[in-house]
Image 1 (cartoon, rainbow, N blue to C red):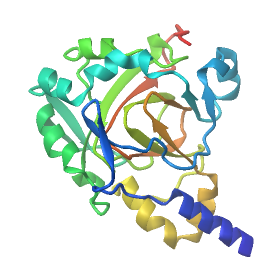
Image 2: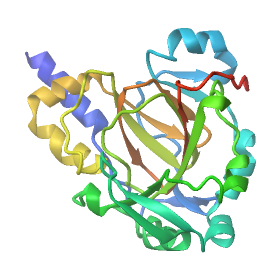
Image 3: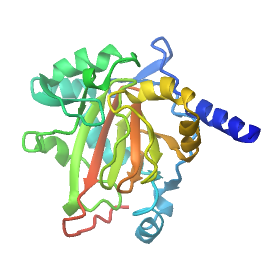
Length: 284
């Protein structure tokens, strides 16, 4: 019994949120404020270098079973897209365009239209460090992209390895430090960090965590975990890892997952619609 309690305490400590200190050392990468450190802490999601990941291995080990983080892709692969999503470039080219924000809760049911420059200056750069803020009061740009208006922007993106182009639907976003969304599920997805770091918490299908869909991931990590023994036992199954610039995490369908942006983070997800006929992108 004591060993189980110790294990639970160690797990809670390992995945406890350490909110970024506004006064901590930081640098500007492509105009976005990020920590000087590249690591997000311990990781228990399998990482595989692309040179060791064949299509056959991907399908056998990961496609329908467990998440994997693909490394070794290099910054050069998507340098054009990263340059296009640099802060100053975004403001100059697209600052006066309207974007659609969603509330940062599980349902993401509220929508709001703002200018991109307003979102960057009034939301992203105000450093959302308030873990008590509800998801319905926190606005977040992810998805709801107008692909016709932003066609030149999305055309610069190189899909992740093994993402089937004919099945792919792209969703782009920018998040403030300590922003993110609570646990939710959907179909298969490849998620790439373009600039910054994004932390992922994952649980297998059927292992639904106890959470309030209107609370932020930051709030869930800092307040809810320490008061529920059953929750602590469930969390022994949590996969927890930070995906850094140019890394891609692949998540099979129906895995519960929550996200937390550790920096001002630029990211893009490739959702896979398996109802569409396959035409595989064999980029490696």
